[in-house]
Length: 68
Image (tube, rainbow, N blue to C red):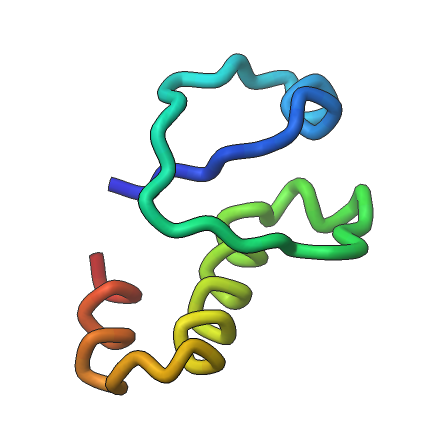
């Protein structure tokens, strides 16, 4: 299950109420453009992959997380 935690401002922009308030791994996606909110899952996955690589997670772990 993918869980994306957003600021109240972003939630309002997306028109979605928060469903859960627990985050196991946090990171910031700066300068997200309004037009990219339509593809927020793709934006999230791309940035998650980049953050996991920067943190030094093994490639097999990153691939498993991305597949889930």
